[in-house]
Image 1 (cartoon, rainbow, N blue to C red):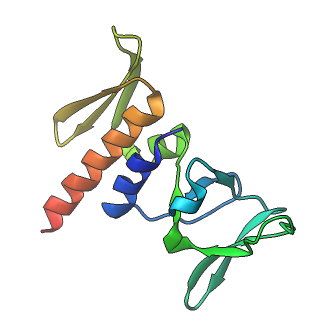
Image 2 (image 1 turned 180 degrees about the vertical axis):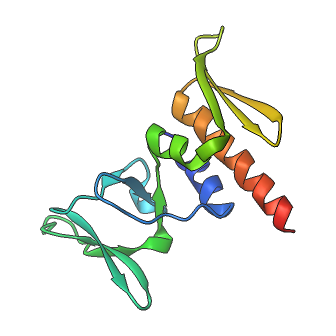
Image 3 (image 1 turned 90 degrees about the vertical axis):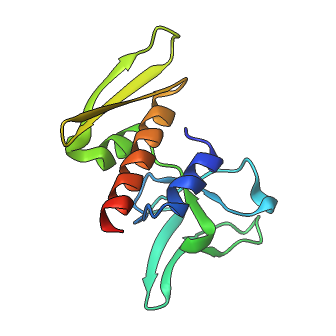
Length: 139
């Protein structure tokens, strides 16, 4: 799982989350540091309103938490979700000599390499770079 710091960077750089069952998230506040939650049709559902998306906590009588606005949630995308975000730029995932993982991307004939201890982190770094390239292209 990627760190909340890396998830915050993805969010701050414009990654948009559309919650679905199985997604993991953290609440972006000091009160819930280290706690993660999973969207599930049974316990945590995404409710769409004109004012935005609310994540409703069903059956959580032991907590004083009924819902949280999507703006206050921090999506912790899985490896497969991050790979999907790379789309056609994804070239490969391999083991690094250091024992970590390397994600390689290719865009416009330019290859880039992202190495990290965890595959999810390497994927997230590649997604950050892709978002940065897209932002530069539209500026």
